[in-house]
Length: 276
Image (cartoon, rainbow, N blue to C red; front, side, top):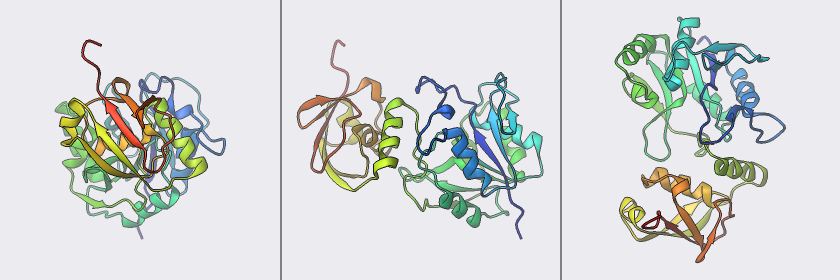
């Protein structure tokens, strides 16, 4: 019988794009994303810890593990976790995954292969390994230390160096994250009202047309708001711009990113206009 992994909820980021600590945000059921994440991890792991920045001196109700180094992102959290318990496997998740469910974590734990360095999901957008909902075995520790020593700070790049078992997400949106206020609104509306499949016409302008490789396309989406659609398009079409530099029109009228989507809407995406 496999020994249960320990759980690590990553909450040491600066939340720059959100403008406030993402872990404190409430999504549903009166739980912060921090509390919800720890609750989910606690159901499938032996023990669970909150990974926090080295300069975070707040008092928490839950056990914490502080980063041992600065500016190393999720890899710093995993390094500190292995320093805390080097012979234990760690199930690492991010605190900003509002669509993550217990059944998804149970699926990951059941699929775990202890002969590999890691067991992970693959991205629904590009098929690459997802590092922030992954079980890292003790065998990955030496490789982690080597990568950090070589200056690697990208968690996905680190995961790509490991011998790993890759599995597909049982719930496609489970690892959609929440980085901006627009993402937060999408999550809240989706979780409170549900999502339904709809078809929209997307028109690309300027550099976005070059990125997408087409002028327009019919796109199937379950997103509730235009912001949710944008994130799907940004990831799947590898769009080069961030949401705050793009304007959107719905049926030829400029709208905010929180505008709800309807069946057969025409969504036009505009890059920054020349001279402004």
